[in-house]
Amino acid sequence: MQKSATNYSALATLTLVFFFWGFIAAGNSIFIPFCKSYFNLDQFQSQLIDFAFYLAYYIGALVLFAIGSSTGKDIVGYWGYKKSIVYGLIFSALGAGAMIVSVYFNVFSGMLIGLFVVALGFSLQQTAANPFMIALGDEATGSNRINLGGGINSFGTLIGPLILALALFGTAASVDDDMIKSLSLNKVIILYACVGALFIGVAVLLGVSKKVPAGIKEEKPEKAMKALRILVIITGLLIICFVPVFSSYLTSEQKLIENYQAENKELKEGIEKIFDNAEFKYESRTDEKWKDAYQTYNITSPAQDTVKVNLNTIVENDKQIKPLRQPLENRRIIWLAAGLLVIILGILFTHFKKNKKADWGAMQYPQITLGMIAIFFYVGVEVAIGSNLGELLKQDNFGGYGSSDIAPFIAMFWGSLMIGRWTGSINVFPLSRGLKLLLKFVVPLVAFGVVLLCSKLAGYQIDMLYWYVICVLVQIVAFVITRDKPVLTLSVFGSLGIVALLIGLFTSGTVAIYAILSCGLFCSIMWPCIFSLSIAGIGKYQGQGAAFLIMMILGGAIIPPIQGKLADFENIGIQNSFFIGVICFSYLTFFAIYVGKLLKKQGVAFDDQVGGH
Image (tube, rainbow, N blue to C red; front, side):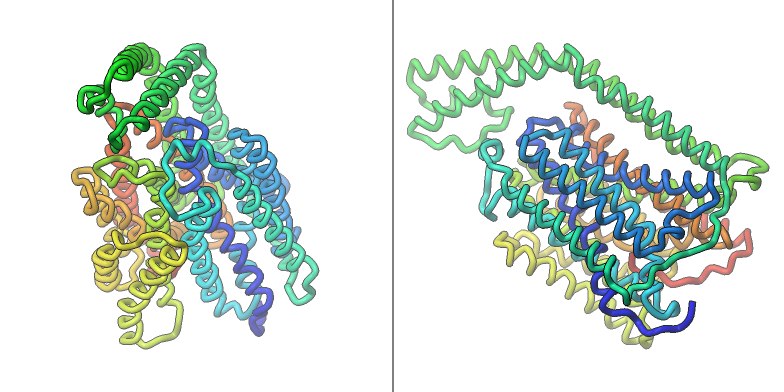
């Protein structure tokens, strides 16, 4: 590529695309607990929002790879980066339209389809956006522009939960779950109408701009029919595994469970009316305290008799629900685990396959296959923590926050990724070693202040987050001691993620909340580490290898629902379900150490610095 001046007008427009990715993805963390209360979903069903969203990335990337591998034509290169992004934006705008229609008619399944289409457009945009950023100026400074896009993406992940929370609840004040059911979704319609209009607006700006290069790429992609075949088989087996899970929600047993639950809900509402009319204010309405409520307070007959009868009926209904639910839950978790094994074992099959050079493309390299699993676990744990965090915060020993109160915590989790990515981006600028070291202390603290300020401006209380600065200081120390080395950085940050989740599993209150939030800090720098380690030494297959890695964003579709289903088990619960994150971080730590040694055996000189994603 010839050296040229940076096209700043096109760059400013394109950074909006990076912003959209973060805004919508992080906003799902608020949308999930809201939909759980609004549509009376279990934790697994609420995680289908992430399932639909991140599955689209996999399907989109797989389709593009299939077209390229079977026809020998890179469809994105044939259209050009500019047109590919324009088409992706239009597709996302159609998804926003589907969301509007579904929200208007209160159809949860329609919302899932809308989010799927939005993310399908994002998949096409992501495939073209990074090389397009490089095409907007001097190739030597291309990484700076990509990191700028990553920083804007992280800013979107910060304010997405705050704006969506205000759109859903209309206020920063506390709104309980009963009030949620009476809320109107009109503001969500307005929000997605604005988002859809922005998609179209940016598409028009890019499409009509004569200053923006077309970015047409004539190179033929490397064929990898065996790799395509194994990916198609994995996809087919995934469908086989997930169909029984979804169909189990249509069985007669499930319908009977829902009838009992509906009756219990009606009975509890009757009790609440009696409590509300009494002379005391009944503060705690958790299931553990319902049984003794009528004895604890002096409610005169006949109200006391009504409460007693309703409570007894609720207890009897719960006894009927348990034997119906347990077999269903067992079958669901078995099929979900089977789906996870299909992905891991399918990729490991290619990893251990002998004589696999012919027609395997980038998958002939072990760092790519292991890196695919690493990206799968990385995206999975990042999304699972953000998506299940809201339910965790509702528990009494984690603050007992309502759905409308969790926004500043969600913003801090996703803001933690911004803190780390801004810090990681320091490396791409030509600064002295001393100034870089200074900025590694200053930048994360400034970014932390930005996160708090955004929550404050949105009207939320942030007092409970001030001491989170201790976690930020831990991350600063980690950045300093890892010296920007990908292997060391990924292994240290992976180990810190394990420690943080173990603290979250075995403690409660503010300490546990901070520990789980800090996983955002430790996830923040993992993407560039995994990516650079995975494509090191694969030569002409780097483009194809990058496509394989992007496919594994699928982890965001698979792992959150599995954690959600584990949380639905009474003997596991939401807090213990976070153990799945320990497994993910453990693999990421193993990947860093093993692939570092593997690259040395291959004779690959690897001393690159870590940049932001």
